[in-house]
Image 1 (cartoon, rainbow over the protein chains, first blue to last red):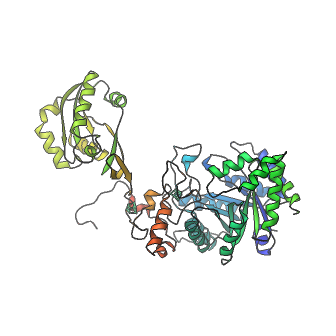
Image 2: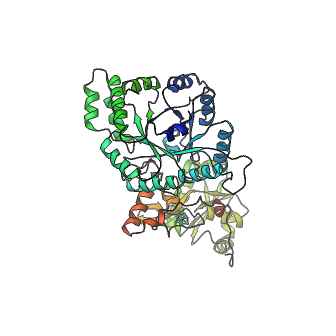
Image 3: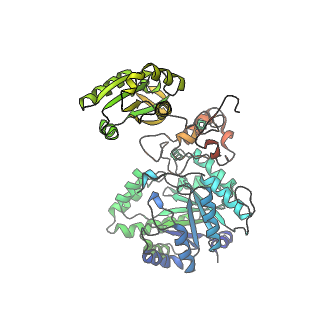
Length: 288
Length: 216
Ligand code: SF4
Ligand code: SF4
């Protein structure tokens, strides 16, 4: 079943992500994708994540597609103006890629080409509008397309953002612009996430909660310090600290969270960052 | 004002090359405000050049070096000093440098880097609040410009990088979208930003700009 249909089926949806290589050797990425294939509904492909230059997300999506994996094409506004964004979207559609995650993208100064020219011709909300318009058979200047697209558009939201209110206002704009599913930033504080869901339920969109696999207490502390919108509570850090095998503990925590999330939202998006081989184990432990 | 910064002496000496006699000119407006190109800095630069073996054929600083008539007048009054120079070093913004370049046939060089249009926050502190985009939206955004003060210039609210009100690019910069949100909220005007802002019309900022009396 396609990702879009699974979303609509009411089933608890699992997605995961892979990062394209920095180079042309795609073996590792494809190996990771193969491990995910039978266990998740779709696989996100990151787009020069953290502004670090890598193989293109579009090409990588196609390679996944060829292996019968439904890809979610992450597309950022950082590197492309409105012509390139639309052109890549038409390219994706022609290659049979149907899911797009519209992102603003990190600023280049945080990545490995800090002196590059940042584009940001559009923002993620405007990108969603374009996707809608391409689906209707028009480009953003109103010109008719020779063949429309048929995208399932998604976006991101950070339920733990501080302050939260501006983030929610933007979330509503993304809904208005046509996003039908959301993958969230990693959530560890389920109570706070539950509150977000109480609010988000009024919109008819699917929310997949982000699960970022914890590998150690040190990593958890790093996330708290460095990554906006992520807060790993102390009891989880303690749990990791005390564990004889922190990596196994991280898997258990992720599995437990997925179980709890089943009551709260529509799915989970697992970010294992380089440890994709652990995703099946997380799902086994969660009984999925 | 236009905020500028002096280039290093080494860089300047590098492009002056073998030119021996130099005429120096600064600007008494913007460049004088930040002490990058007022009369004292012009004099000081002259001394530094002399110490490195150059001759200064003359120096001055006039008000508004970006004003063609001012430059013409100064150059005709100092024709002898200018003629004696092999090149002209300008301590002003890029507009000033190019105005001198229009009026003199001699090689004209910049002594400053031109940074931005800025407000004077404190004596030695300048901040950029407007990037001259050609289509002002401050009426909707609570008087705070997202085009300039958001590192990404995005128009529909904060990106995912905002961290406790600070921008992801660091340096302690505040997130413009959090500022806009708070300001509008305190004024009961959040509705201003509830609708989706259209993509920006960058053709309005097409370079080079020009405008004449009567252009609307
Ligand atoms: S929107 Fe911003 S950049 Fe544009 S004119 Fe207004 S203040 Fe300047
Ligand atoms: S953190 Fe705020 S100011 Fe910085 S790029 Fe994101 S939206 Fe713009």
